Image (cartoon, rainbow, N blue to C red; front, side, top):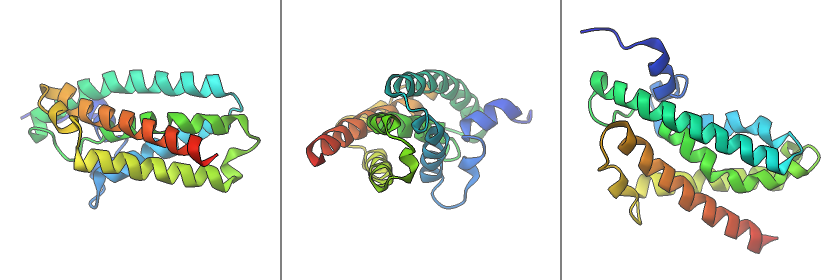
Length: 168
């Protein structure tokens, strides 16, 4: 059998996070959080949202492609494939883009509180899979691998936005 090509393996595993022995899905979501942090420093709400949406679009397509290849080597919905968690976490953090308007948002405790809440919400929806999230896994190949986390991210973003609104 051929060796799994490097580039799709790195994409599928979110740059190696999928190899983490305990909670690779959580590690994939944390990678999403860490990679997104520089966007919060831009000082530009619209630019942060557009860049986040661009990352989501590009890495959703790359994730579908690489997850499909990963299934050929590792079987159906392999636990090492965590790009879906990274993308889902990016979706979950879209409401955090309002912090891009603040000077040095990474120094604000509210930013970190809401970032942790977004991670917890996303992991809840990803693990429990309510409200049709589990049904998304029935889609074929890489689409099914990515779709459940995209929906989990959407639910998380909606709840996070509402919580942030009512807490302000």
